[in-house]
Length: 268
Image 1 (tube, helix red, strand yellow):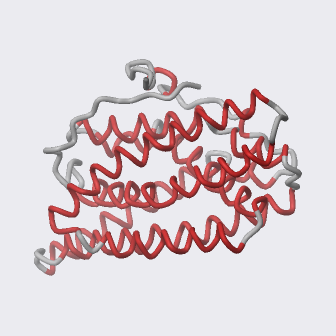
Image 2: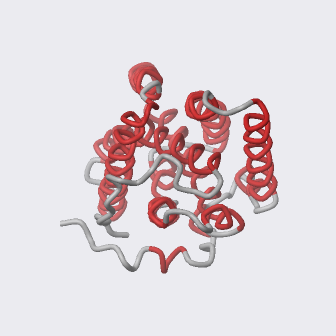
C-alpha cells in the first residue's frame, strides 16, 4: 500500500457528469457520505494504533497508510462537495453536520472495539462496491465526463488495497465474530440511513424543475440502477461476510483494480 495524491481538476466538473443523471447524483451523494464517515474511520484507527502500543509495527504502518489514503479520499470528495453546494445542493451541508455529530457521539459513548467493528463493516461494504464499479457497474460511466469515472475508480481501488487493515486491527485488539457481526449489521443500517437521506436531498433538488413525466422517468431510472446494483452485489459473494473465518485479504481484485492505481503518484 502507498498513499497517493491524484491530480484531478474537478473545479468545472458538472453535478451531472454521467449520461444518466441519477447515476451521477447518487454517486455525488456517496461522495458526501465519504466526507462524513472517513474522518470518523481515521479517528477510530488512530485510537486503535495507540492501543496497539509497541506491538505489531507492520500493522501500525498499515494503519498509517490507511489513514493517509482515507484523508486523500475525503479531501478530494470535499472539494467536489463545495462544487455541489455552489450548484444548489447546499442542503447537503446541514445533513452532513448532523451525521458528523452522530459519529462523534459513537466515538464518545461506544467502546473502541465496537467502533472498530463498525469500521470493519464499512470497509466490507466498500470492498463489494469496488467489485461492482470495476465490474457490471462500469456501464454507468460510459459516455460521461471521464473525471467522474476516474474519481470513483481511484477511490474504490484504494478501498480494495487497504481492505484488510480494519479487519486485522479489530482482530489484533481482541474482536470476535459476534461483535464483528453486530458491528457489520449496525453499520449497514446506519450507513444506509445516512446515504438514503443524502441521496434523497440531491435527487429531490434535481427533480424540482422536471415535468411530471420527466420526474416519473427519473424515478424509474433510479430504481433500475438500484436494482441492478443490489442484484449484482448479492450474487458477488457478499454472503461470505457471514462466515466466521471470513478474511477480506482472500478477496481477489476485480479486473482493472490494480491497473487503476498505476497512474497516480505517491503523496509526498
